[in-house]
Image (tube, rainbow, N blue to C red; front, side, top):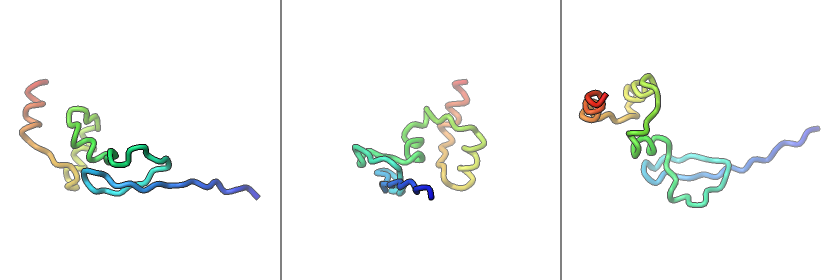
Length: 77
């Protein structure tokens, strides 16, 4: 019989959104961890997700879109 690999999970909570997530490695600074959603909120200029994903998240209410920022981005291009 083959041995089953024992994987340990660590549970953390996002310091911004309060969302809980689990990872397979222990964090050095768990207070500094943020979820992917919170990271994109903090770094709007680095949001490299495709427009399809952004629109889907907007429809589901998971992405807060500020239309003033969108107008500024369009005018810069």
